[in-house]
Length: 77
Image (tube, rainbow, N blue to C red; front, side):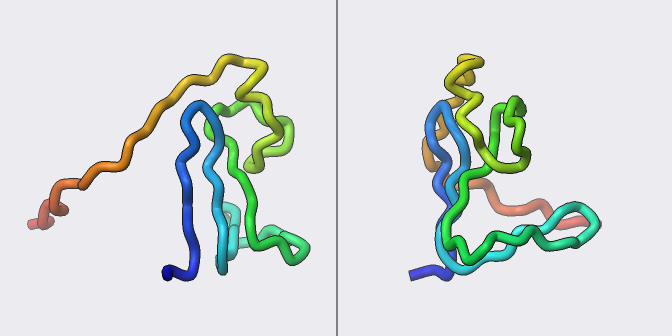
């Protein structure tokens, strides 16, 4: 079992569970108060970014993502 799991919810947020840290662009850590699961906004409308506050429901956010294999990375010259 991996140390963390990220679930892409259809028409909703990203759910992160397990052993993880969350930092901003400057590397500062968010204080998660012992949480082992959080949901992150994908719609851009949350008033509590980067966390989901349910705004996707009020704004009609739609995004269905099915699991797939990515192509191999392209080697840089």
